[in-house]
Length: 222
Image 1: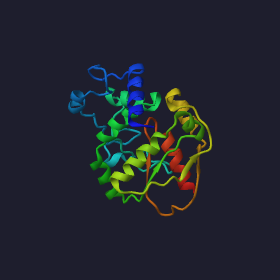
Image 2: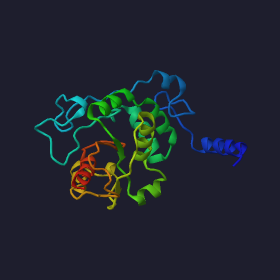
Image 3: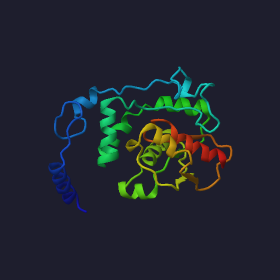
Image 4: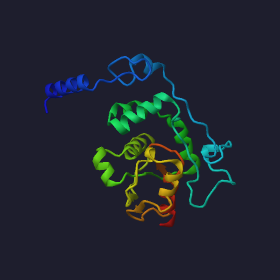
C-alpha cells in the first residue's frame, strides 16, 4: 500500500476508534507527550511470590519453594499501577499495539541484565498462547515481549513450548480455577534440545504463578 493510503486509513481508524490519554484523557494517544514524560511506573517489590517475604530476584524462599516451580520471578511492572493496567488491556484485549510500544520502552532492563548475569541465563523462552487463541488475537503477547528482550539483552529466543490444551483466558477465571486448570500442564515440548540450559520464561502477566509453574514442570520433566 502507498504511504498516502496508509495515512488515510490511519486517519479514518483514529476518527472511528479514538485514543484517549490514560492520565489526562486528552484525545490522540494512550499517553500524551506530557503525561508520558512525567509518568514513572511503580516497580514491584522483589519478594517471594508465595509469602511475599523479601527475596533477591523474587526467588521463592526455602519454605515456599516447590520442585516444579520456577526458581524465581522478576516483574517489570506492577499490575496495580492504573497506567500499566490500561496499557496492557488496550494491547491485549483491544489489539492496540501502541500499548505494547509504550510499555516496552518503559521496561527497566538493568534488573534483567543483573538477573541474567547472576543466574547465568542462556535462553529466553516465551509461554505460548494456544494456536486457536493466537489466531483469533492475531499475535502472541509473550512472544512479542520475549523477542524484544532477546534483541535488547542479546539472548536467543527459543520456542521450546507449545500449548496442547485450550484453556480460558486467566482473567476470566477465579484464582482457584486458574490453579486447577494448570494441574495438568497445558504445555508440550516442541523439541528437547535444551539440556543444561538456564531458561528465562517470559509471560505478559503473573497472577498466581500457576501458568509459569506448569511450563517449568514441562521443561523439567523433559
